[in-house]
Length: 144
Image (cartoon, rainbow, N blue to C red; front, side):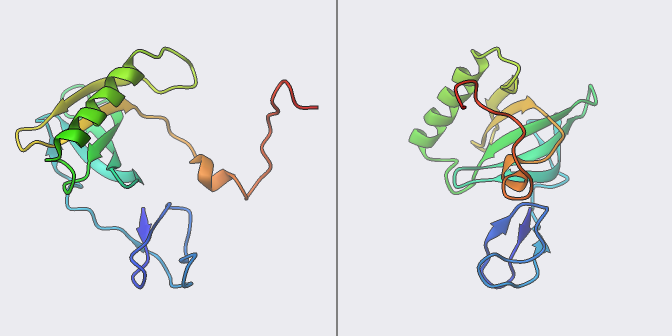
């Protein structure tokens, strides 16, 4: 993730300037990078961010497997409603077995109350970075 030093907006890694003010973007500094979550997941890089959570590329310390870990924002971590919604999201996605949906590998709450979901990591470009830069190559079966 990159951030604008002027507007403080976050942008995907592929951008170099702010869409709002044109300032040069800087790499976002996240205090969780390099820390270990739940005693086994080493957070290596921010790969996504939203209003409720941040998604990290992480490595399992014991089995050396790369995963994507969605971690609830510290501002929302203590909100019981948010924690319950996050838990339901993890349980719902775990029930889906489809090649176009990532696998949920683990979920939990740390000792400090931080909820997280561990998912299969897929390396590639974000859809947002592809749209607008190249035509989509698939067509819906009902499109003429």
